Image 1: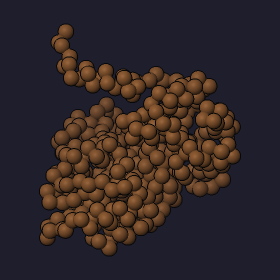
Image 2 (image 1 turned 30 degrees about the vertical axis):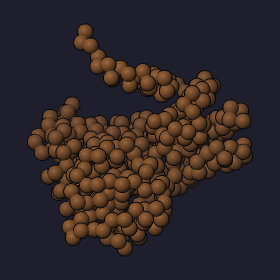
Image 3 (image 1 turned 120 degrees about the vertical axis):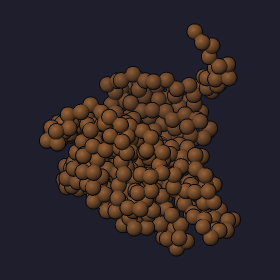
Image 4 (image 1 turned 135 degrees about the vertical axis):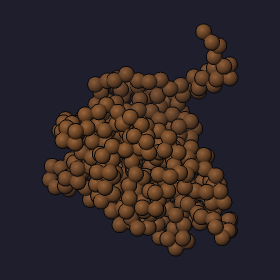
Length: 386
C-alpha cells in the first residue's frame, strides 16, 4: 500500500488529541433534534410521489442530467423550476446550483473583482469564506451582527473609481440561530451604494409569508443585490439557488466556474425542487398548519428554557436553531452522549467548527416535534447543566 503522507497523519493525530476527530455516524431511531428538516419535507411521501408524477408528465424518466447545463444537461425542468422560484421570491431571475456550497463558492469567486472589497460577518458559513478566499477581491470580516463595527471598517478604505463594496451576512446564522438587523443593514447598504448579499439558508421555510424568508418578510428584496437560498434545510431536498437581477444571472452563467464546470442536477432532483416550492406556496399560517406548529414549538422551547433557568446558557434565538454553550470538546461531547442514550438526537458542535470555549449543543426544532418531547429533553438537559 502507498505510504500516507506523514504531515497529514500528524494532522489527524492532532485532531484526535483535541477530542475533535470527526467520524460518520450511523442512522438511528432517536427523536430528531439534530436535522435541518424543519418542516418534515424530507420524509414527506406526498412530495416524493408528486415529484415522480412530474417526471412522468414531462417524459423525463432519466437517471442523470448527462452533462453540464451549458452542454447537454439543461433539461426542461430547470426553466420551469427557476421561473417558479423567481416568481415566489419576487426576484428578476433565479439560477439553480448543485448545492449551497457550490452556490457560495461560485458566487464569491466570480462576482467580486480585483480592486473590489468584501466585508463579511465574522460568523458566516464556511462556504462563503471559501468563496471569498477564491476571489480576487480583498475580504475583511466585521464583528458579528455589529453594524457600527462594519461602518468603522468601511471608513478605513477609499473606493477607487471602478471599485465595488460587497457586504455579506446571513439572515439566520447556522451555528447561533440569531439574525442581524437586516433592515438597518439594507438601508446602510443602499445609502452607501454597497452591494448587500444575504444567505437565507436557515430562513427559508421558517420566516415570511409561506416561508419565503426573512428578506421578503421585511420587504427588502429590492435592496438586496443577491440572495443565496439552499434547499437542504426546511425544504428537505438537495440543491440551491441564487436570486437576483437578470444581469446577475447572465453573468453567473458566463463566469461562475462551479456552475459551468459541473454536471447538472438530475431531473429527479429538479422535480423535487419544483414540488417542494409548490408545497411551500400552498402552506398557510392557519390553525394546525406545519408553519404554525413549528413556530409554536419555537415559542414553547424558549418558554421551557426560561422555566428551567437555562437562559444564561443559551444564545438568544427565535429561529429553529437553538444553542446551549458548553465549553470544551470533551465536556460537550459527554453531555451529548448522555442525551443520546436517553433517546434524543442532539449533536455537539466542537471547536474548530466554532471558536474554542464556545463549543455547544445544537438543538434544531421541527414542526413534528411534540411539546412533551421538548419538555422532556430540556428537563434532561437541566440535570446535566446544573
